[in-house]
Image 1: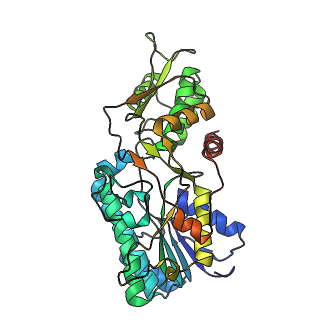
Image 2: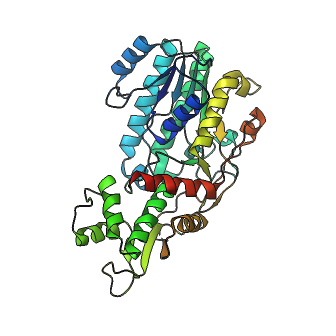
Image 3: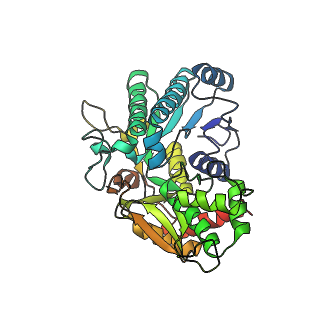
Length: 370
């Protein structure tokens, strides 16, 4: 890519897309193209075709997607498979028709089997059944990988797929109904800390910025306590009532035993831009008659338990209450660790340690609600 190349970042406001935009700008790229979802509905094939015909981007980062945590994935199964398939089908096909020089498609490591050998190598794709709770989303992302491979083989395009591990960072989703585990725990413990300190000003500011099921900071104390309780943030003392010094409990779904890997979103963006600048599809094509598994894992190659993650977040937030792991709720896949040897061989490694990233993300989150 040249510094003046026209680059379209689909999903530029999200966790992934915003980090890619920031990285491109820091590297001196000046001709970036964006559209909000209200300006361009990527699920609409006619709108996407019109956009590519008018703009003629040279490079595309496909970071737009419908994403969410275990609850959202399992609840809105039809939405997750339909919307993600429509977005990626439209963008990848129109990128081919417009003669885009290179496209980077971003997926997720949930594409791997539920009981995948660890760490997860790219070659383990489609070797067993998927985790049920996010199967529709995973199938959509697998389809995106195969679409990129197929267009490259049939049409000679240069479309690359990358599969980031669990990401976190600025512009993350803190909606307790739909967020992933790390930002959800940061927010729940922030609210729990405010509750244990009887800091109603902090509670109301948080809810005004991001209401929970329509309950905002103008609601009564009883209504706020009720909605917080519904999401596992509650006084555990016999008296209750939000008095300062009360023991506050934060509920976490599952046993806390599953192992997870986390990557700072700006590290992920750096890997994506590195790949777009210096690597091509031919660099990841295996030898042999069958071309499979050309995607690239992006991660740290290190993991920890959800219980240990919660304790790290508790320390960073300063929440002094109790952590309750509700083993009656689903755990999901017990271990998900990426094998990053392919990416390492291409010449990239991560920088931000998890504890540092959590501290920075909490700082970022609190600046948004002041």
